[in-house]
Image (cartoon, rainbow, N blue to C red; front, side):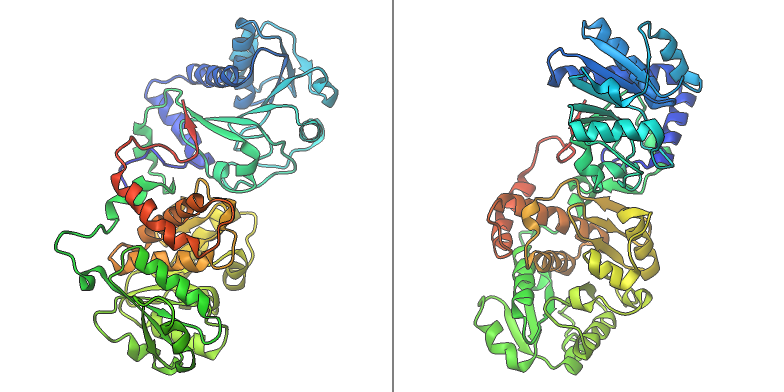
Length: 496
């Protein structure tokens, strides 16, 4: 990964970027000025002149606030400033001294008369819950829903996890600098940030190579060079042969997964199912192969050397048959996807495959069943820990789906339509991952690409979407993806 445009920087990495910038001749005072002026400019583009209250904290966020107040005042806006305390020192104190207007003590009653609030109390690196007057004013701001601009993040939001420390008021606009942080994309942070703007304040991009971030926004730059577009001399056997373990009763899940694997380009897909359900599978899509395979014969069915990828779990049910199928898949030399009912047992056992790292696709409940509940580390930290523990690629599904590799890499979805929260949607995703693996994509890239494509297919479906619509939307999504020639952009995020 040499393209850093979509890198996500955690709090420690952003602090290091600031330090590196200073060593490269970018003084902090000047960077703070650019940051504040970028916020003021973004604010003025969205609202007409009105009374503004700027809430300033004691650190660098507060320093940005004084720059913002100064810029708005010079533009003729009526501005008041309320501060928790005087800045501790450094660049924030420099800009405090350049603000010539009055400074009120921070108090919830100060919100009276404000038509717009700039939240410059605390940034993404807050290490403790908000309390005292800071919490009181943030809670009052949330109650009154005065239009709000957050500097870096809404105060109280953890930039690493997206979790709320004590309290946080939703912002209509959040302006951050240089690169996004994970907390901008992880819920509840994503919902609290409103419109996201990333401002270029002059930090040299060279610092990213030094930092070597291992987290990215899940977008085309991350995986597009690995996509398996068919060559002019391709034939079905060169495009992979995937196997889906079909359930005996809940047959719809495996059928959705098989169809998705075919739509994403796999040359052949076989559903290996119990004999009593073969007729149901065979009556569905004529292009999907169906084979009667007992649970204890599933390993033998994978011995065909042309079969190079397998999916176990969707609609399989919990029990001995699924346990046997999962064990056979992990003994298989090809690519493996484990979903739904296959996600059981010790995490270390789920990653012991003979081929590339298996891909595990749990939703939060399944994740807790295998790895334990998600704690203070949040979804990104939990997914990374699970990937390391299992030696697998973990796709922690949700509106902010996280893909984490055992090597520490991670990708977070910038947005996914709410309509994807429908029965069978996860089966389609598992089939997409399976199909890309069958065509030779590496595990991390295949999982990341499938999540993105799945989201785009959901967006095309829109209101009324059901899982059956997703495979039908794939040709248009793939066609658009292949023909894209426009400059890359961060999906769903504005840049300055």
